[in-house]
Length: 115
Image (cartoon, rainbow, N blue to C red; front, side, top):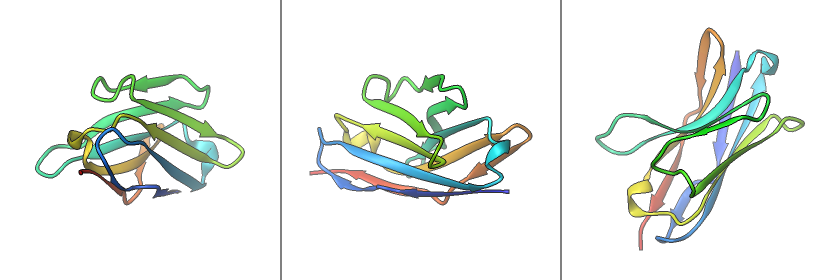
């Protein structure tokens, strides 16, 4: 079992920045990749970014160039730095862990981009 706890969401003005954090615990050794998804009201959950245990990254086009995913293996934590935020980035952001045959999800943290 893997537990994921997100933090760092909140209200930010357009053009602003936020850094989300996700602390993983439990069967850390089973995790192949960590990442972030988001779900806006009335829309399907979509990929934001992934990072493998080796540090290779993958970004969705919607946030490419505006987001950076990173991980601190010593702290079992993954981060998502988002810059130049737009109102359409408003969503609940979920931490995700790929444990090969099992997917784990956090409860999400709400990001609201509004003036």
